Image 1 (cartoon, rainbow, N blue to C red):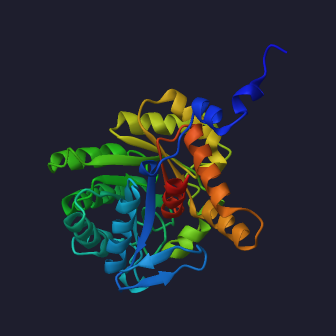
Image 2 (image 1 turned 90 degrees about the vertical axis):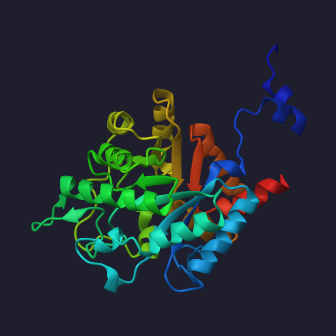
Length: 325
């Protein structure tokens, strides 16, 4: 045989020499659930993940920086009594999220802070946008509200705003609102390819953001929609001023991630979502697999498919394990 691929797999030095994909802590972003009361509150559906009060959030940020993570993505958890059909708490400049952003940037100015732009944490309907009298999610009225929210987050000090709502035209409206308010340097991470996935269950439990009626299929993407819809959504967001694109979920849509990587020059992130995390944790707790090995393999596969960075609840553990490699 003239070709023997195993020659280059014979030892670690040779394997490392030709390795095409790398995974580093600086490519990881930790999603964090915030709450008003101090301390940490366990989330049953997400073992090892907590809802964090103000001081706990600062401690997490310190740990993330020490491990070399890129930054934090913030998701506020509000009591039901603070929610209403209009999601008005999402526009409160003294609310949980803007206060948290200010505290983080005051204490750790070098930390990358990403904020979620959607109404579901604040709305008593559980939907990402405003809901009309007939139960339909209103696109254009929602976009105006989301643009206002983005400006408020920028004013608080957010480095990146991340519209996760999937309303048509929201990236362009947010870009215009930010620019007109003097926040041209604030970047937009668009959830450009976000599917109506069954993998979000633990997240919605943690945030108490499940829709109170209907579902999100009229604005999130159909898992069977194929590549054309993903390309179209990404093209529109790119043209409207997105700085990053996002694929969510990650593992079940690696093929979509690869297609987008080949077609777009913008940085692409992927969200290793709550259901993907919970499955690994559950199997590891039962001794069915090696958690460290599987987590690092999963994250590496997301990078190999084309992600420049990854949002993952495994981020802190993964960063520690990478230090030991």
